[in-house]
Image (tube, rainbow, N blue to C red; front, side):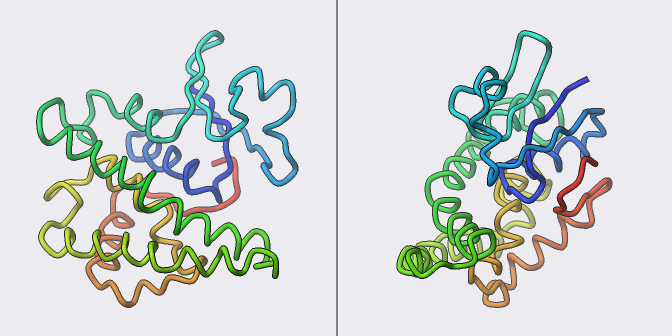
Length: 203
């Protein structure tokens, strides 16, 4: 059985939980408290020297880190990952977009506001994330005006990658009411069988 080391309130970890639930894959969830610096313990460093969650334990000898790498590994052979060609490349395109043009702004703003309480010494950094966060949302909005999901009519791990932080973007100061296609897209994902909401639990 797979074991996931993560925190359900982290979008990068929540991605993994969503796919596992969508695919009905049995797993154990091991909560890791990053604010308590549990990722810096010798035990955790032994499984991921980069000291970050999530980490997927595949077996006693194999561990995999980086959320989108884990999604690609778990989705192999499923309907959530095209087998090859341009469709598969489109999934990767959106996942790279998520890591480089979306997460650094929307997720970081959320962390500063929700988990740190928007301290005065980070307010300028928080404000600096807003413009590029809205730019990322606008790009998604344009795509979702043309397609139900990010690469067509069916959900993929591209959607899971971007849904995780997008659906809680308001916690970083981004009002999704400005993006009606994104709001509809979120509702489509939330209607999928076995959907689970973001929560701190060992579900």
